[in-house]
Image 1: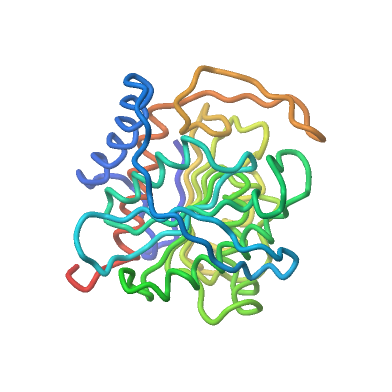
Image 2: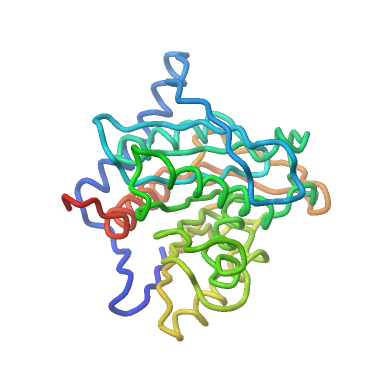
Length: 288
């Protein structure tokens, strides 16, 4: 495992017991539903307006609430190119157990799409603009702390997260961005130039043959040299979607070729442990 961090800014070395437990909780969710055939707990169904002017319909989303009365810090969770599915529900419940209000938008349905894998029907920028609409919605809720909202994204949503962390993007589209951003195996080509608006953590697979990590590492090194709040980990042997508990598989992606997927339990545990620590440090509640 190769890690990098901005000196004195963003330590990402795992070690918190609660972070390790949080990673195990994610895996237990996967095992429980697969073994018992049960349905994931339902959240609150809502809609909000995207900042993407090209989509006329509102964006449907599901909100998952932590136990208690709040208000709570919150997270916008951005899906991959196949949209919503069991993995996104598992991630939302993981965020919920960490004490966050988790909002999961569906960026495909209002555009009449079933997938955007290998095609450009939904750009990472449009996906990020949906996220900003979710951010504005969360800021208006009584059960969230408006100044403590982060964003997490996976694959296509990871590319949207890189855009969401961009100072240029945030300054052009909204007053103030996220307090934290985490991108899992993102489309590194989506990473905009310029400074960051949010502390950013990237969790990358060394053997990712769909979204290779080299571009993210190059940008990360340049930002790190400028003392930007960025950190990343590259997991040796990890493929794209290394956190999805499923048998080894391949997929023919249009305009790309055959890609490989392999679940990596150790990398998943470490990645979610890092995510839990990163969020705890940056989305502090008044009692922290």
